[in-house]
Amino acid sequence: MLSPQTILLVEDEVLIRMVIADYLRHCGYKVIEAVSGDEALVLLQQKDVEIDLVFSDIEMPGTVDGFALSQWIKQNRPDLDIVLTGTAPKAAEMASELCEAGPLPKPYEPEMALDRIRRLLAQRNQKRSQSR
Amino acid sequence: MQDGSVRILSRTILVAEDDPLTRMVLSDALRASGFEVIETASGAEALSVIEAGRSVDLLITDIQMPGSLDGNALARIVLKLLPAIKVIVAAGGAPDPKIASEIAGYYTKPYSAEAIAEDVLRLFEDNADAERTTQIA
Figure 1: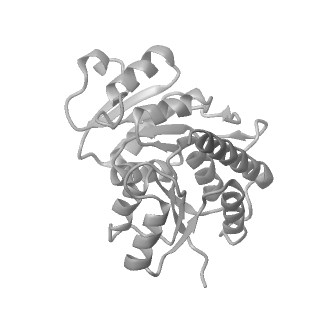
Figure 2: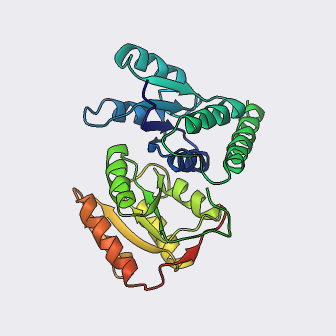
């Protein structure tokens, strides 16, 4: 199986999205960014936009969260893999695995990048659980 | 990701555009021209990137975006408080007369992303100093 070349990154928080997008791009992937599930659907329904893998947060503003996105993909794009990254360790682990399988060698100081992703996501998850 | 001791030759462009396709096409064209692009979908998002200390050389912003900070407000803030960041407006509709004379460029939709990328390349060539050290955000 060929490793994916274009990743659709769905994440509402810009700083987290930016760090993950940077990391994946340095591994050689093309990354398309969407800020919400609704935006992701707009992009997924475009015929001329090639996407090989979806890397998505779960909790997002708008009408489509990660689970709804996953359902839509199963029904409409069964060829597409989706990675749901609700927790910090999961996201960092998946990003790391993608970079292992990626077209280029890992970016400079990959552990730093992963640490950063973990920390940002852990902070965000903490804030979210506190506000409930 | 690079640490502070690595010198790179690329400029960073902050794009504020809420339509995902427009944002994608513009960002792609800019990256193909060698720029680093940070994508945001609202004025507030764009500001949060700047406030986080991320080094940005140019802001390209739409005008109509969700939230209380539209592109005109964002442009005015950057022009006033962050003069080191150049500003280009790429939107539907006429430029705000208050900022028209201070921005580095104005494009109306539908625009050619390649044309903007070419103009941006020329804009930075005019500033001969193409080398800078990145900061860790």
